[in-house]
Every structure is written in structure tokens, then in C-alpha cells.
Image (cartoon, rainbow, N blue to C red; front, side, top):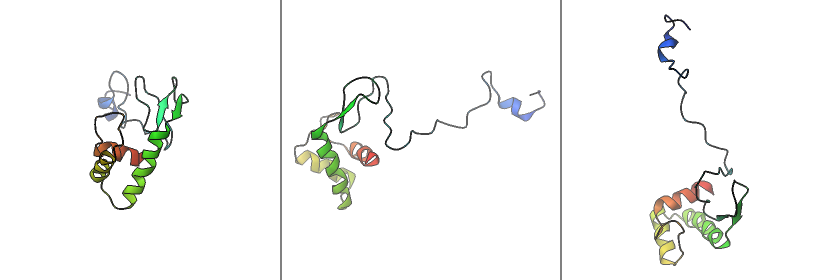
Length: 107
């Protein structure tokens, strides 16, 4: 590109700008992150995405969340229901609506 080319103004030292962030992985694909936690319903048994095993206690909770949502309960109501039922959350002291939302997105 020469200096008269309008694209030259936007090309940095490393080349032209990218159009945006990388696309997300396909649904159902677990992407291993260095130091990242295993998703709800799974436990890490080794490095990489193949090092996951199901956690039966968390699998029961994961099955309940879409059922409660289908009954018309909101995210905060579901979190409250899980708390009142005494079901433990792995990542926090109590259930939060964002955790319920993330589980629903993966379901």
C-alpha cells in the first residue's frame, strides 16, 4: 500500500486492524483456560478439556434450574430457591442470579 491509499492510514505496525473479538466456540464445546475453573456440573481430573468428569451433585442442581425457569421463575427467584433448599454453590457463599443465568445459557 502506498501513502495515498486510504487503507494505509489504518494499518498499524502490525498490519490492518482486526474486525473485532474472536468468535465464541461452538455450543457445547468446553474451552480450557489456564487456571480456569471447570464449569458447573463438572470437576477437573486433569489438564485440557478432556480432563473433566461429571459431578453428580451439581448435575442434579443443573437439571433443576431449567425446570424452575420453565415454570416462570426469574433468575433471582431461582437463586433464592436454591439457597432455601440448602443446595451449595461451589464458587460463592451463596447463589447469585448471574450464576443461574450462566447455567441456563449452557443448558
